[in-house]
Amino acid sequence: MPQPVRIAPSILSADFARLGEEIRAVDEAGADWIHIDVMDGHFVPNLTIGPGVVKALRPHSAKPFDVHLMIAPVDPFLEAFAAAGADTITVHPEAGPHLHRTLQAIKALGKRAGVSLNPATPAKMLDYVLEEVDLVLVMTVNPGFGGQGFIASQLRKIEALRKQIDRSGRTIDLEVDGGIDAETARRAVEAGADALVAGTATFRGGPDAYAANIRELRGA
Image 1 (cartoon, rainbow, N blue to C red):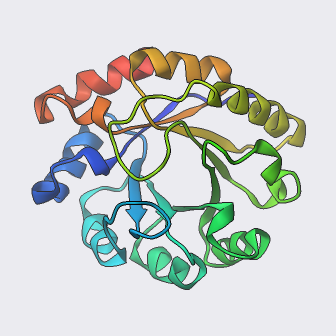
Image 2 (image 1 turned 135 degrees about the horizontal axis):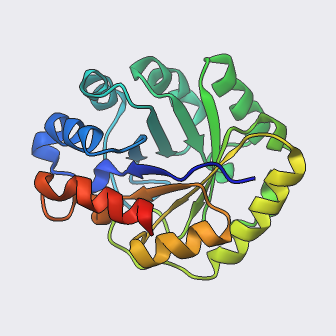
């Protein structure tokens, strides 16, 4: 069964000149997790941050760091992000030759292991690795940039994954990232999601608006 909905503001939409302050602000505004998008300019068409920035941000919040690695090959960087303070490390099946081995490596580092599915990546990619997974992240946009529109076809994937997770009997977070606002948040949760990544919807309006923005998403 779905868990209570968690809100994970994506710092991709924060003010990068004030990242520490921004993380403290969304923490105090009621964020459940801090979502950190790591992009390499190769696996996805954008370049963001590395483990050094994650380490620098770690003292600014005690909330779980939900680190989404959009990098390939991903395996050589797992240890660095674990040491930097990631709590959950999420990878893509396409980012290395052996997804099962990658998930085992994350668990061996003492971290929660996540798998992210791009819009064209089917739910069945998880059929034989679900026992190693703590979080499934459904991308409802093509990864690489914030501010994109929600791809409605992914609702069917969320529904399929909800059934798969429930059949497993395990507690696995079902997270959705991309184009999340009050309306798409409601649709994603109705389909079975229990964690929402929200960048633009959280950070719009500046720090004074963050608490209301998070409440609106949670209430939706």
